[in-house]
Amino acid sequence: MDNWYLYELKLFSNILFALEVEEAIFFSRKAFKRLHAFRCFMEYQHTEQHLYLNLSTLCLEHGDFRAAKDFSRTAIDIAKNYRLIYEKVCSELNHAIACIRLGEGSEHYETIRKNMVVLDYLGFDTLHRHFVLFLKKYEIEVK
Image (cartoon, rainbow, N blue to C red; front, side, top):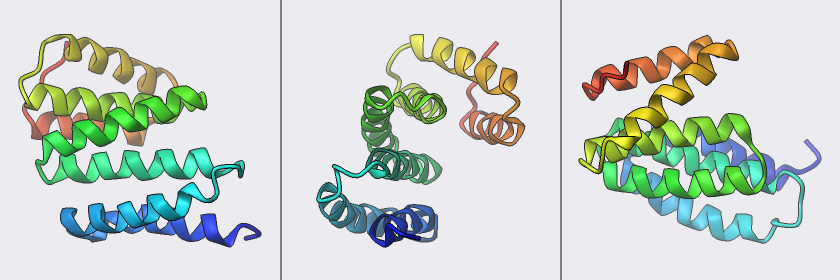
C-alpha cells in the first residue's frame, strides 16, 4: 500500500477487539496523536472515524457505556463532517444503545428504529444481524 502509515493505523483499528478496553484506549490515544499528522491526506477521515467507531463498539461489548457514548458521539461528528453515511448509521446505533443503557431518554429508541430500517433497506444483512444481537444482549426492544 502506498500510504503505509495509514495502513498501519487501519490495522490497529481492526485489532482493537483483541485488546482489553484499557489497552485499546491507551494505544488509541497514541494513534490519534500519530494520525493527526496525516490530517491533510484523503484517507485520514475514514481512518480516524473507524477508530472511534471501533472503540465505541469495543466499549459497548464490555459494558462501558459512558466511554461508548463518548467515542460514538465523536464518530458521529466525524461522519457528518465527511459525509460518511454508513459510518454515521453505525455510530448513531452505538450512541443510542449506550444512551439507553445509561438511562438517558426515550428518543434514542426512534434513532435505533430509523437506522435499523436503513440497514435493512440497503441490504446490510450481516450488520443488521450484528445490531439485532446487540439489542437483544442489552434487552432493548424497538418496534
